[in-house]
Amino acid sequence: MAGRYEGKVALITGGASGLGEATARLLVAEGGKVIIADYGVERGEAVAKSLGDKAIFAQCDVTKEADVAAAVDAGIAKFGRLDSAFANAGIVGVVGPIADTPMDDFDKTMAVLIRGVFLTFKHAARGIIASGNGGCIIGTASVAGVQGGLGPHAYAMAKSGVIGLARSAASELAAFKIRANSIAPGSIPTGMTAHVIAGDPNDLKTASERIGSMSPLGRAAHANDIAETALFLFSEGGSYITGQNITVDAGLTSGAGMSASFQKTGMMVAR
Image (cartoon, rainbow, N blue to C red; front, side, top):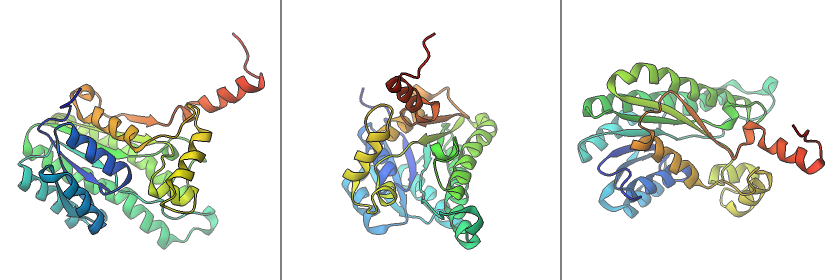
């Protein structure tokens, strides 16, 4: 069904690549307009240009409040309203044993993954309240924020924080008819995950094959799986959902992979 985001406007941080780009393209295809807020100018401008007059680019370092505020204001100045925001910009950040973690690197990781998300929620709420139409704000969490052992320590800590922020914000913003939720993706073949899995951010094929081989559903996720989830939450279909974390991981954190393993080895007990 076309037109699921007709006439609405969304801010997307990290909108120039990966999950953010996929979401921007889907929202525009469904009748919406987008503000692509991203640190990378060349890529951001190229994506915005490819979407024509339905998109603008705003250079944005999400750790800087002035940048996030300016991106929101630029979108409202251009399109006259703000209905949604996807706090999606992220990095892997510091990795390694907790006892050896450099605190400067920890702080830089938290600046992007926690401060950046908080600032996006803050200024998106301001913009949506001013627009007066209600709306929805989403934060990108991760399965690492749901289940231990699925991500580096600082990353997992931060992604748990995104889930907590969405729940907390939901309770306040309901008075303004603004919903707040988070999406927790499993591994998805994007440049960021390809860099971790394959050692090359451009080797999406290898990343997809490895992720698919571990998926309980037998295939790797696509960026569009997350884009469709975001669109659902932004649209009328998700209009009664707030304060929730939606995990998009082929059932990995539900134990689906373990269940399949038991079935293959004959260890599943029939009931």
